[in-house]
Length: 214
Image 1 (spheres, helix red, strand yellow):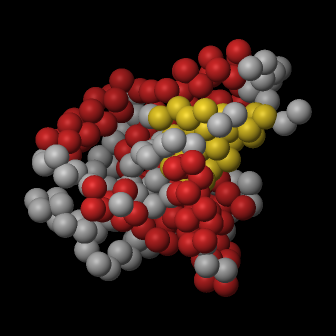
Image 2: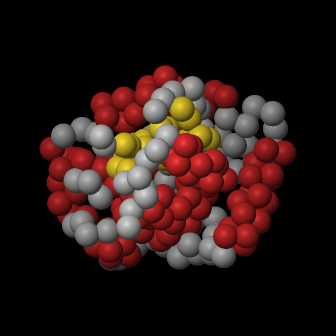
């Protein structure tokens, strides 16, 4: 029997970045397929509910993500440029979004080629790991190459076949699973929301009898 975990994940989420080493370890430790299912950030797919409580949630996320990164021994910095074009004072989302649709589409295509988790790991480390101008020169192409993929080939593929239907399917599947935010890992229809729920997911895999790798 093949066991699988779906990972609903966003390039704008610091917690999605922070979970990537754990996703690789999960696959190394258990006989389980880990499927990346990229979704658009809430800032784009549900901006009418984004931070409606005011600025406190934004400040907390920034504080907590930096704290969590330090706890995990990972570098983190606010991406430059931000994958989402947004005024962080008013929280208004720009109509033109030159980065996030391409990144999410590339993630979909990487997942189609069974390299989704590797792609998420290397590209998110470029974006969130403190590298300014991650979109400049060959930086993105080099990160994609570390995942065993070719950026030009991925761009050609998403130009030939619109990835948006798959992105929308991923977002619908996240909703069906009872999730809303990212990262959300789903195993046997049970959602595990948040980077800090990996240990709980590992416990569930063990209870379900998912074999450990030698």
